Length: 229
Ligand SMILES: [Ca+2]
Ligand SMILES: [Ca+2]
Image (cartoon, rainbow, N blue to C red; front, side, top):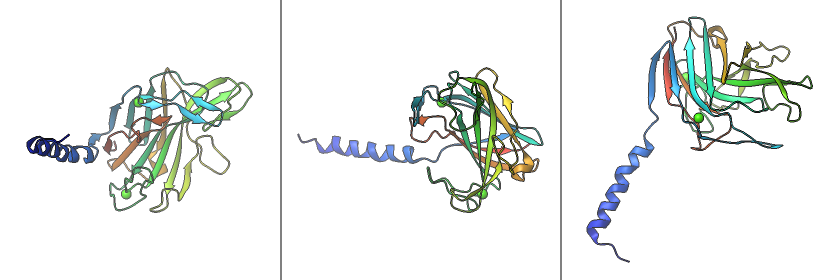
């Protein structure tokens, strides 16, 4: 079939106009002190484990708040969690708000991050085990809480990093706070000092939904430029 020339050029023009919209950089939200980011329900596929599939930890709201000495992160889940302890949200933090310094993300390619903080959903189980990553697939959970796992990127490579804060508290590492899970909210926090932050400092945060396989391929929230309280 042959298309008339006029229709063909309209189609091509349409394709050119649609191009830049898709390639557009993600929008950045400016916030002072705190920010709340709503998120779609149903945008996460199941978590793949060696034992099979687990239901995803689908975040519907992410709240980030600073109080002058601590930064807290709270994720509201669409459904009650199963029995798998794992990361709910990853936060990549550009502490000097400069893309030219820090690590480049292997997945996504965004630049400039000095730290990665993970909001973990931790659980203890009937058999006495506790986990913030993986968990016991046989025993039933008896308690659930939120904790932070923080790493510092040493350079450009996002796999080259050192421990700052340990979710479960391995010997020799500073242990995260434990915040009991309330309803469907997983929350934890870290000290400004853990990331060498000061009140009034402006930091760039890229949060990423991590408890499952994001259906859009990235799970990225809009970037936030946050001025700390
Ligand atoms: Ca979601
Ligand atoms: Ca930086």
